[in-house]
Image (cartoon, rainbow, N blue to C red; front, side):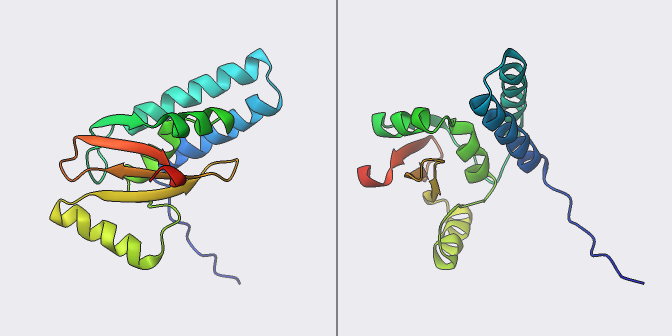
Length: 142
């Protein structure tokens, strides 16, 4: 008899993110009113989940014009990246950089994540040490 590995349940934030991304992708591929409504419902759920406590506070959200342009181009929203960032999913960082972010949480210094959009553009998400501001910018704007 095979022993099945127990799956770790997905955190609520991850489920909300995955549900939104599936609904958004479907609405982009087939923009019917039904698909658009589902995407909107799941977007609202994503932002409700984003309001819950994470590993740190994000503060005021800012974005450079280049980052906004890239998000629009890739049909993505800041919440997709913010929810990962505030919950310690640092994106495309190597293990050393991830460890530095975890240390930054303990020491109260700035936290930097890097992600790629659907159109393969790199974005930084940076939360300042004061936790008063989080900024989106394209990698070439850093």
